[in-house]
Image: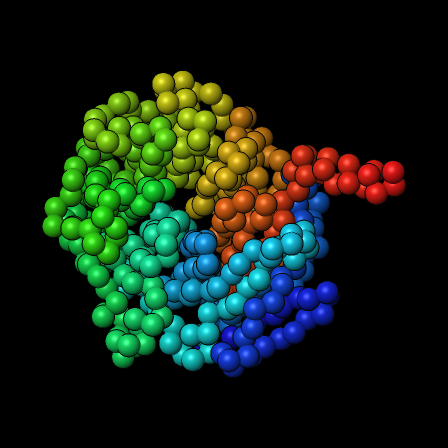
Length: 400
């Protein structure tokens, strides 16, 4: 399967094709978003980090200290190398080396096939709910499989090559405890707890304190109840000691993470099905329904704080690392930044050759990686008010 990796160095594009040994690590350019402005004017697109010719949209991404993982709609798992540039240059934020397995025709798939409804719109669920990768990048957890399992799989290429290229040899565990398809899962930020949600209306809590590869999945640590229809999303927050889940029954159920006790049940204001949720670090629970196309924000005490019309069917919603913005993506393929406080739009970003399908922030929060429907991956640099102020001060100091 051919790959074209395009690297922009000082505005000169070097295109590398079909040769894994020629794929080198080079600085990458990025686009800029000024989040101090509410303007939605298009921002010119620059050269992508990589462009795959697989024809599949990127549905999930994960950043670890040394790797960027991408999963596309055909379950292809790619493991790229990256590292920040020591002397930070805003337009060239980090080095990037594309996964050479594409050019060697050894692309990995995430275990057994997923259900047809598992990915995308039309009542399906997004990749952000179906996949999780451990913080060290060694293990992939996937749900949505037709046999009602969730699977643990090794990601390292060395293990794959030594096993003769057999994907099944990479599977550490195939766990079958739910009575219906696993529709969502979430790995806690410290990798000690895995939560799985299912069409069977239950949530299961799995202890992974010994590490994903060493964990025992013979039985769940706890089973959580409270929903009467398919669970659509689940998130955890270890600092708040909370597990929050949503369902087609129109409820959002809050449990304590450690004691597995039911704390509170929130209801959609119109009892509509809830398809997405997130819990922010400042204890806001934000939900979205494809029925009314609105975002609703609640406090953990149950107060309905605010709501806003979205006019799009969302399948991705995540808080930025600085807890200041909410990122959303929907069928329109636009990455929208919203204020966590009142859900108002801060910026819309869509000027690419293809629709945006996924996004993730780098650990510093200075850059956003966006995956597109055509399989390409782009870097976006965020410029906050504080960054603009620092830049202005540096300019002033240069003249004094």
